[in-house]
Image 1 (cartoon, rainbow, N blue to C red):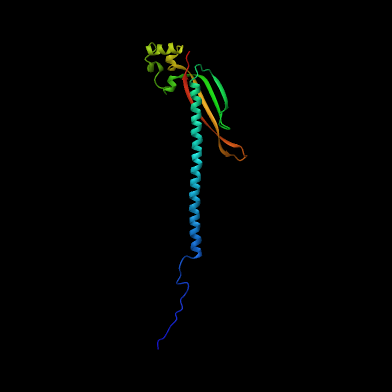
Image 2: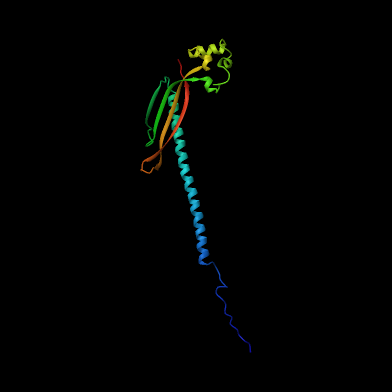
Length: 182
């Protein structure tokens, strides 16, 4: 007679799948990575918006600078106002009359005397500078050039708010020089 034996198997030894602890750990890791990816994507979207605002501010500043540059007569002035079609965007233009010292611009404030750089007191270059600028300080200063110093500032909202709930604004400023015709 054949003997039939029933073996009792331990349910812990023969398992299929993962335990609840392993599943919890796996979901926690997946959730952490998902949160990280979402933060990176949202930061990218925010930076894209900031870049678009800066590009628009740059474009508007260039347009305003071109308007000033196309004026036939410039004079020292300050003006500001709203930009049509752009809610809460403002511009400010400042035009100042200045004298630029070529020696300072060249970074030669110390060292050689200005006469040496311009070829001496009686040089033709020195006489030309004195004639064009209307002064006789050509060799003492390296030449003063009368210019308009033009600033254009665009102020724009970023879309955010500070701690008091006030809209946050940024500024973009460009500047240039334009020769004054005496």
